[in-house]
Image (cartoon, rainbow, N blue to C red; front, side, top):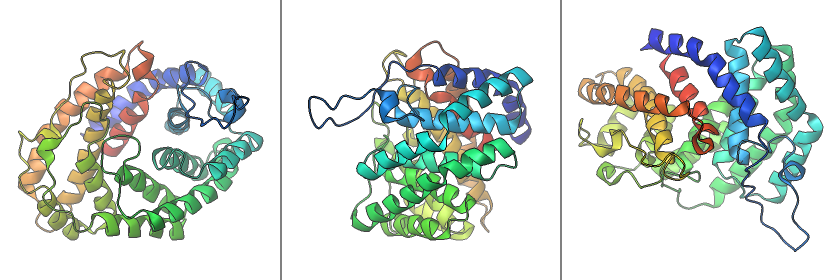
Length: 343
């Protein structure tokens, strides 16, 4: 799987760079999710979000920007490299990002936690780069990392229960991505906040009803998102024990690891199921690694996850290359994440 994933990334890097460039040059259609406070409060997307005003919505633009940075780090041909750098340089200025930070502060529950997570992941990818230009973007993003760290601390302190469904507000998915990113950036205090929330919300979970998944417009598995988070928080043996209690009846027939089918690619919500295939694949890869590292190796469970992986990844990868914008504005990020996890 490792060699195959690396080869696929080499083959797809240019193709995905073209997807990013297309996204970053599409200001419309755009779903702003801005709450208007008066008849006059109707700013354009670019006025609201000068760094992230394309790709259909804010969070998609953020993770398409992350994908662009990741592709530059992976390596592109000279023309694509130059075009992508120019597009990102125009967006990721200190002035533009200051406007983005002010909006986050003024709207403290906005894009919680999904958009926050992708923003910190973007900052981590840029901030840990050895490339001088990319590293400069990371420095410009640092004030936004401060803001998100503060917002996460406030949110987790007051939220008694996590959000457990398979859409953007899923708590486990956002916490997991932020935890990795804060660790990469050396933000130990913010990482500890995420770890504390994960343990408080999920450590005692058992008997997850995996056969209830999925809902008709999920792009995340609520159960696998939770397990993917706990694999980051617990050591390998503790995680293996937790997972055995969490999904005690996992089998090759379990719906929680089943491939989903999209019947209408133009329907943005139905197209979420393409993303579900990709996010399940990435989560299975990471969960499998954690289980295989445990003392017992969890061979039976690992075998179930191995059998589920290829159908999910294959279906998800096929959905990325499409002319349908309801899919092309976001799926490539999740495909690249799954392949990167498999390396």
